[in-house]
Image (cartoon, rainbow over all chains, first blue to last red):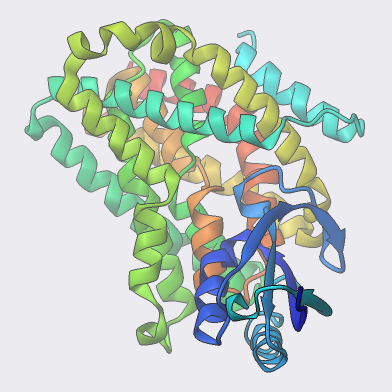
Length: 100
Length: 312
């Protein structure tokens, strides 16, 4: 089976941004996404996600290199200054290239 | 006067967090309890609302909306000048106090009912009305120079269709349409279990409020004083307005508690979207770490006593 290189974009941030980020990512070329509720801590203290305003999400997108870079740059430029944001990229391989 | 069990459950949660207990309510349970409480409060309110004449409720609704819009205008200069806070932070905190806390309302009703007084369930409609105006005024205060840039449509959607206002208004509407007979089969769930569920929710609120205590160190002494003084002043004014509008002993105390309360569901989300540069630790730390515990333990009994003297 053929495998195709793609980029995994992972964004951990405040749950309040979920809908905005999904809209932005789609506009920038992402075809699909996965969201998990997560909890953790970092530079902004611990966020145990016990109630609405304190929740965190992990948004995962798999897309071509160029799209991944655009999304990461956009998130860092627009949201990182004022929101809790962690972004990272990782190489992945997918089977059905047209889906990503 | 002995403490209501609801308050004791809150203290149990608070103590668990302070003592670093591993107690944690699963998030789906918290969500379920919140949905239940909002619907139950709404349903009861809707049934009572149907019994009122518009002439009775309209002045109250107008007073509630006006109070919610005025509170941030009063709080903002205090936070700016006395507290020396940045504009975004002062506006965000002011918005939290203009908006209201459904749980404080529920606790006030429980305390008033326990004292054998009319807990005025129809005031649930005021809770729904008081969620948004304070938030709008807070956003305008933060964005005085760029009000046009605010995405009002997005914010209106988040506030109106956020679960707090949506379920509360939905419950009120269903209660209003169905009436007491229609809701009778649901009484075991939405009536009899209410106080027990409220206790469980307050246990969770204790855990959450306890978790905000480290924020207070960042907030500093001014905001701690503000978190106690604001509910005292606003609660006193609210009781006075309630008495003037003929709400009686119990109803005036509940209205006082509403005015004294600060939002920690609708306002944090809306302000996070509209004024992201405001530090949420300050507003949430003050609203949830100081004002909520103050109202639940000391404030509500005070408003009840004040209402007794004024409504006598």
